[in-house]
Amino acid sequence: MVNIYLKEINLNLEDYFIAQFNDKKIGDDGAFIDGVVYSKDAFFENVHFKTKWMNHYEIAKKAMLSNISDAIAMNAKPIYALLSVAMPKTITKQEMVELANGFKDIAKKYNILIIGGDTISNTKLDITITIISKTLKPLYRKGVHLNDLFAYTGKLGQSKKDLMGLCNGAKLHKKSKFIDIKLRDKFILNSTRYLSSGMDISDGLFSDLDKLLLINKIGIDFFESIPKKIGCSGEEYEMLVSFNKRNRKTIIRRAKQSRTNLTIFGTAKRNKYINRCKAHHF
Image (cartoon, rainbow, N blue to C red; front, side, top):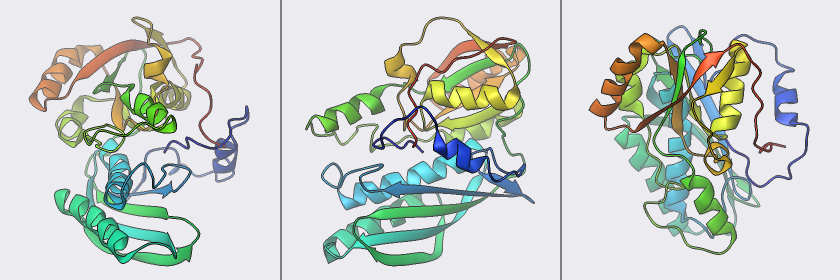
């Protein structure tokens, strides 16, 4: 998940910390163990959102959807959710109701059962969610082959544009992608058998592509230049996928069937890729 407010420095300490845990289960959007995918993300006030930007219903909704995105990215069906919510003492009962309704409405939409968690007092609103999912065919980040094609779903760039607007005092439209996340579950479910790899775009296309290429030890040739305003836009929660060029027509057809916009933007080559975006994490 994009950390959009912490001061940017050259060294990404998040990657350094994760590297301390040398386990082959780490590195995908979730951990796949015996048919079950476990994924977890944090959604913290003044790090991922501000309460003056979004009401409590919208905050809970986005927290749930951004976590469900990790399950969908691995072609897993979310089954259970565990919620940990740290709330300030200043929160009102009405705001608590809005928060609960946001969690419940998204859980209902995706047939997820909220089975527990924890609540504590805090100085601000911090949310951590664990999603437990099931899949018979997980989609991993590793699996890209030489000459595979790369594509992303949806349209990128609007989330960053809306964030910049918020930082400058603008108001969000209710349909803004910053709060109205569209997950690509139907496309992934119908296309997984033809995909060689996949992950969700949370840190931005260029940054997430960097992770995908690194784990596959491969590079990319872009078909055309992608502007930084598109490539560096985080919290898009679209899908970044790769597939054999022989499956191009099939993937395009599956995308149309699920009404998913698909942009094929490059091919896997043996060269070096340089991420043009600044680090979002601490």
